[in-house]
Image 1: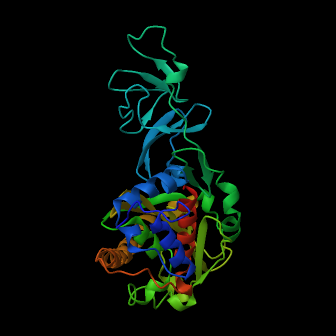
Image 2: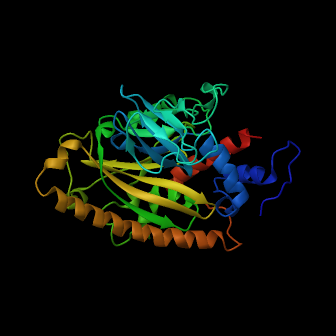
Image 3: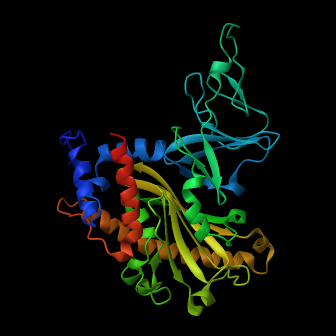
Length: 376
């Protein structure tokens, strides 16, 4: 388990050990998937100080409305004023931190149920009952959280201070050009409780190699692991693994549009640390990961389509078939992830021997270690 021991340079020994393993092409030590102290460090250094996904643009509140949301375990509040300006705040009253909003609402103000303090959609304090004029109302405003929209996803930087997200994703933007991701809308979602570390889920999603075993009778005959390839991310905070979808696979998909897509490839991509998404001819999907503890998180599989698909014949039937298939594949993944976590928790697991097919995993680990090391 982790200790407070440091090397001669002041770096915790567990990080130095992880760096040495990474240099040998190996994965993270098992403690990175089980230890609550290290998870708390990730929460502070990766989630709070980084960029984490919240929702799709079509799920944002309409003008003169607001809604609560979760991002990497942080409770936030999204508002949209009459001019269509989006803002993000902590979902906590500036007075005594009461949860400010429990559900979506419309109107120009939000009232805390505890002491009736009222805030505008710009976060400004509008009224504080019984409080005299000496209170500094400007100092009592809600604190705005930095946010960016990228390819139709809303990202937030909960702790503030991060470098802008967009410039670091130029290489990934190039790989995703022509797919129309920014315009796609959410048409269905299904949520799962997951009793394993968030990185186990991330690593499973972002490589095709596990098709050989986990999906031997379902995906691998259609999307063979041996055909996967991974882009060089040049040290930037993203990964992208791809393969070409054959005719047998495409013929089984209820939503396929080859005419408006730049290729017949499927891209599985990530923006570190938590966005996991994929796009294929005619549709896209993403895995909303909400970490809760070192060994537990929630995930929501969300399916995306171009908005013009919503009025096509037999839409509901085709969507139901798609989601049934998605859930069946995810159940296979869940069984695998649960067994991986058991192996990691068994006390004898050595760092993974990564291969060329695990390259996205190595890219995440390199980024994660750079972030953690830089914090000391």
